[in-house]
Length: 362
Figure (tube, rainbow, N blue to C red):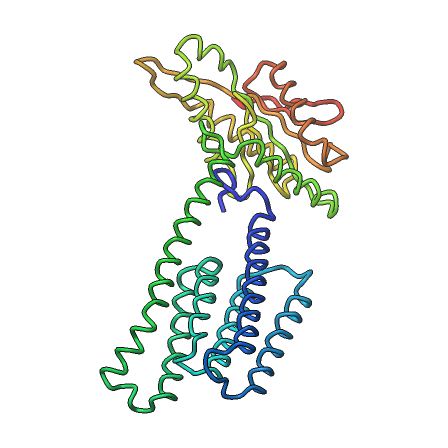
């Protein structure tokens, strides 16, 4: 994934979404059980085997309780949700078997599975489960009519009763896909900077907090690189704010081209950028920073017949190489950046106790 352009900032985002789906699935399972229990006590047509139906309800209730109990503290995943929908299909089919097969008033319970699957598991899995339901339905139809199921009138009647399932599956899947697409766009907009398309600081801070916790626990190195555009105010004054905005975009793209896709790049402020390099020492970060500095030094663009150029000043701080506490790395990188500004700009400085400066390459 390209962290410099977009990333699901909250590492628990998908997990929280799946937990929400799991809670909804649990409620659907309870609703399914309640409907079957109500029908058992108030049937609209005779139940062919009361003992078998009671056993089916008890077994399914036990499955739901045990599945939830054993997975209470485990990570929710889509295959677990799929397993629950398959269990629902099996339960409904068994219930229908004892309440009238294709003529059972409970046939529409399949709609609960289709809707749940479309919302949580996507279009492909929904089509697969509709096919599974269709196989169960045809098998029950064959049990009811034997070879007579293939008679045009009978087959047409059965398909007419099944067509609402296909329609619900199609419409629900399309709506769920549209909602998911819109949610992704909204999420991306909330995570990125409008001008550059890079991550914003809210998103960066969430990722940074996780990296600090990981680095502190496992003593793995990481580096922060602070990048500041030199004399952006002069560009705004001489060429106008549109030129300054374009310069910020150009520099953002240049930095993005110089870093790894695993690095986390964000716009820190008006003319500053911040780069998080995981499992990276100061020495490697210095080489990357010099590459960034040189790339921007050689970048320019035309603005109303004039060439706009700029340079950047860069500060580096690494944990545990030079900075003893992980949560101080960002602050120390800013100190190193200030040293680059003081030393004449267009250069890279890295933080150590003595704040030794690395001269800019010619």
